[in-house]
Length: 461
Image 1 (cartoon, rainbow, N blue to C red):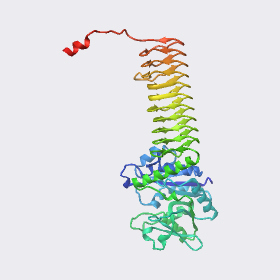
Image 2 (cartoon, rainbow, N blue to C red; image 1 turned 135 degrees about the vertical axis):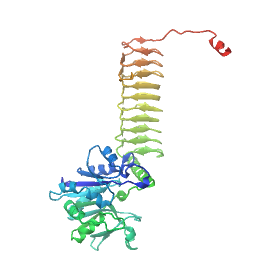
Image 3 (tube, rainbow, N blue to C red; image 1 turned 135 degrees about the horizontal axis):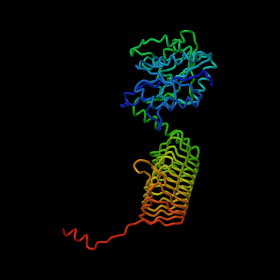
Image 4 (cartoon, rainbow, N blue to C red; image 1 turned 30 degrees about the horizontal axis):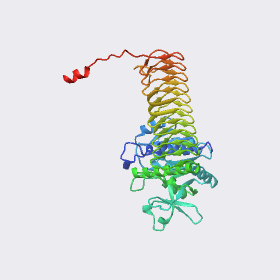
């Protein structure tokens, strides 16, 4: 891609029918805002110079972007042409060199893909078009603007359905709302746009007519992906986008050798990688940059986000975030792996166990009802029921270290900072406040006092 090529993404929409304070491009498809889908497609197409036109609840767009891209503000929503006008100064800076082109995309049309962007640009430059409209052919074009061509195939305009004749309504080539423009020609056309319509808005489609009437060449690229036209104006359409994206991703994993016994409740983000032979059970949600190795079993009812999971792992009703789980680990049911945890190979973690910011060594067993926080646990350690690493004193957090082959008895409290040595034991009910040497047994219990007949006297009163 030429360094003179850039993109403007229109993201100022309110989405009133969503019945939400959220800007429409920020509604999520498979856990990612629609705007992010569009941004990533630009990146994959090597269009890195991006300006985002924000409008409704602009501060939410700013907060999400965190300064990653240039933005301009559209104070009034007066049409697509008006939105692009807001980026006029930004475009002028990029029109100084020869051969510059700008891609215009809608921030609420998440399925525009990198191949479509690149192929449309190739056609745009090959044919020396002033504008190239990205189109798609669909079975049911109702509701979309139709792209009009002459007998030689050249574009002569775009007509909205309400203005189309019966013959024009039969046209299946529809306008996606995405375009490649020569940047200098777009700037000229923007200055000539007029709000000559019942809505009093500036339409970007009018710039196509302006260019054609000026003798410039307009073309169209028909995408092989008919979903480039899809967007969401209400919650029902948003659900349809999620279902379409979800089904498409599951199909890809099926082709790659992943097994699904049922897809009920299964949602997989597009950044997730799953090895062949792995089984995904019902109710599994996989987000972010999660990677799962071969021949694992995930589910039922797991939520995994940004985790590296090895081969042969079994997870049952587990929530795990920003962590590493190595090969042949077995976790669950009802376990929580919090961020910055490293579960090493062959570890067994049972029901109602929480691990946070800790390393758990190879073949360690944490069977049930245990909290391991801010800890470094060695290999082949056994935790009894109800053990707790007490890592927080109300002001600061401290780490616990447990050596290899240690045995942590039931209901042990390890008051950090503390170290339990290799092959050391803690007796059930012990509160450990000092380091336990290698091979030692720590016992901390008060003397048991028995009062005979106490309960009888209490009940008699």
